[in-house]
Amino acid sequence: MDVKSVSSLLAFSLLAACAHAPSPLAPASAPESGAAPVAAAAAPSAEPSPHAAGSINYLDPESSEHHSQSPINIVSSRAVPGKHSVAFHYQTSKEHIQNLGHTVKVTYDVGSSVDFDGKSYDLAQFHFHTPSEHLLDGVTYPMEMHLVHQEHDHPERLLVIGVLFKEGLPNSLLGTLLPSVPAHEGEKADLATTLDASSLFQPGEGYFHYDGSLTTPPYSEVVTWLVLDQVHDAGADQIEALNRIEGNNARHIQAQHARMVDHAK
Image (cartoon, rainbow, N blue to C red; front, side):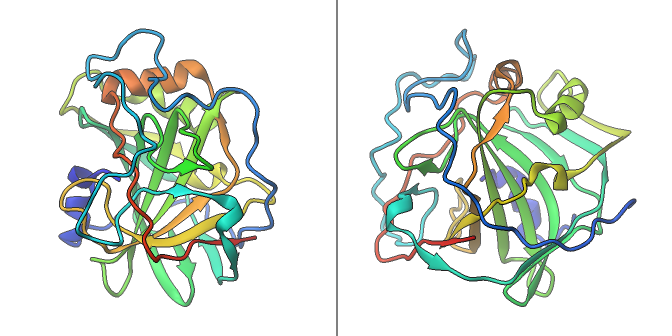
């Protein structure tokens, strides 16, 4: 997860239109095995990104003196059954887009939130990693999206929803967003065009839950992670467009240590 984007969150920055009724995540099928998870060493772009870091083995955990670091390799067969109370209260948002060079960040209008296990978390922003940071059963996917939420009463604590993407059909949210991304690092655009983050969620979708950290410095262990268990589609050109901006910006996986990963349906 991007800390240049999240550093402002830890300084208590928050994140209306047509509200969506609360809807819990429902049961999910196993992750799709269709087109295009990528090899861990491969970039999704057909041509090298200017940020490309060469051959990278994301399967080897980095060593760390801390024991609750992210991302991790989620092994679905080892996840224990989980049961959580979760409901979404998402609204549409105008586009507030920043090209940060290392990622594309979209700040979300105030008013959207998630209730999780009795706590309310405000949706602040979302951003992207190419390739994915989390691995699912040892597979690195070409892209991961992070929806960053701040706990309403303790904004220094975060809930982040991770969405994995494979090459497939074009994604409608990306189709709306990408034409508006500023061309140059450091630029931003505030447009009247609206986005709907709830369009990302699919019927019958569950998630893997664990406690972890930010994935860039300072790696603060303040994050409740929900990684959706269905791998979503995005067009190859959409993934490539983001990779050309941000390059290979995924942190290596970290050791799980004694942490439990549960799978909620």
